[in-house]
Length: 317
Image: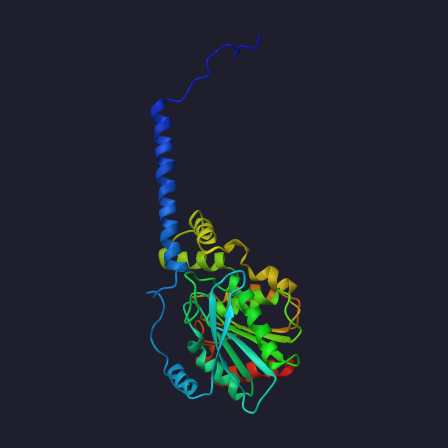
């Protein structure tokens, strides 16, 4: 007979159980509260105190130029949604079948892309500049960080082809969140009219960028907060934040892609561009811009930027 058979198993005192349950409950409630707070902080479109709101004189000049151009307002319905989206279309002079679709950054809007729109339009391209979900004139109460937006931009591309014809040749261009958007697009089944991509300072994933910012701004570790925020966002915004990674998309990419990143970027760390560059086996080029901070490569090196970007598109469009 087993010596322990028939003996009573010693139970934990009731106060220990209560203490453990209380601690776990407080932790869980605190985590849920923090997740909701950071969802509001990072995913809800509203004025963000941590963003640089100082106007760039060059952007202001480009916006004045944009207002003087004969533009069109295009409309689209978001993919897998009934949200109404808007975009600004600037036709080339003289007329062209070549179009650059430009994607703006976090909490930006189409007008913020005025310098890039001007650059491409002066180079002879039509330019289509959408407002992402929850940005500018487009509907939405959440920020997609480029992931659901990649499908919206695919619809915009198809609208370009429908309006400008099957002989259209299209380039994709994006800065910051827009850079991530066009990288996410690279793994989708795109129309054959899409010929090349330029991404400027895009991140590797939503989780990676949130992790980096949590450390930079609040000195918080990734676990357990970031996965909890990502889960909260996935439920409330209705798209899978965990799936939003550039690497698997870039591995499927077959389009020529030019990666640009400021060497002194502390908002989307420069290290991310090397990961993105390594992820694709398509034709590719990399330019880490000396001295440039986040989304400032055009500002710090305007002539070189214009030359490199327009030459890249001219090679394939």
